[in-house]
Image 1: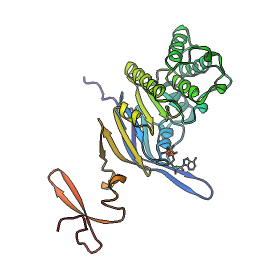
Image 2: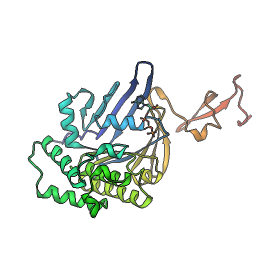
Image 3: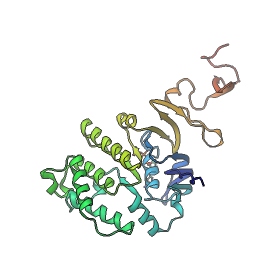
Image 4: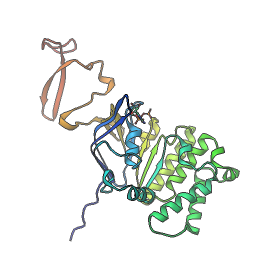
Length: 297
Ligand SMILES: Nc1ncnc2c1ncn2[C@@H]1O[C@H](COP(=O)(O)OP(=O)(O)OP(=O)(O)O)[C@@H](O)[C@H]1O
């Protein structure tokens, strides 16, 4: 008998998220198709307002899709009852939100913050109170994010933004999550601390086989992970592997031209499609169907 294939860690099919208020409607994500394999590490890049955080929140089960499907390890998050979703989040998903303080209990020390997450994770897995192993793990994590010294006795609410951010990463890793989601986890750190945090995330993922998705503006973080996915205008605009970027042909054949090509093919211009052996070329024409300035006669 052959084993059933493992489902992707994350699978988005035609994912849509609309924020509605009384006066306005913002379509933050439109038709996102994305597959993240188990054990992969992916950086979500893209301009401000593109929809990266929204995508991360959906993956974390902190928000429901407006349309489309989102599956995490084969489970459709949009269809889970609230309690089952809470359990799945506590047992399988580690999250670092953009504002570090939001991840933490302000009146608790770093060790207490980690212990709290461990308790919730163990309860969701049907296990008892954390024991010695968990305490050792907490101490090791705190050491790894340089919060092992005197700062260990400080309440999280009194720590600096950078310390809170490092603690948030340690808390998110406390339960060895199968899926780690982090929104700008290095934004308040200097280059060296940022590298250390990304190293910790990658090492933990390698040890446990976890999948990692990180929203970042930091090219160094993008370069340190397996794959980059660029979100533009609520869609997957491009993907990169090993330093090379590729556009993605989306639903109904749509392709987003990266901004660096807008000078050659400004949005709104007409282009002729030429078939090549292994794809197509787009050539600008003017409104009358004649070749544009930059074109061969
Ligand atoms: N709660 C909300 N209510 C209304 N609109 C929202 C809400 N949250 C986000 N948006 C809008 O949805 C769009 C996508 O926002 P999102 O925060 O996901 O983008 P982002 O790529 O993470 O941006 P940044 O890099 O600046 O964090 C933006 O137009 C934003 O203004």
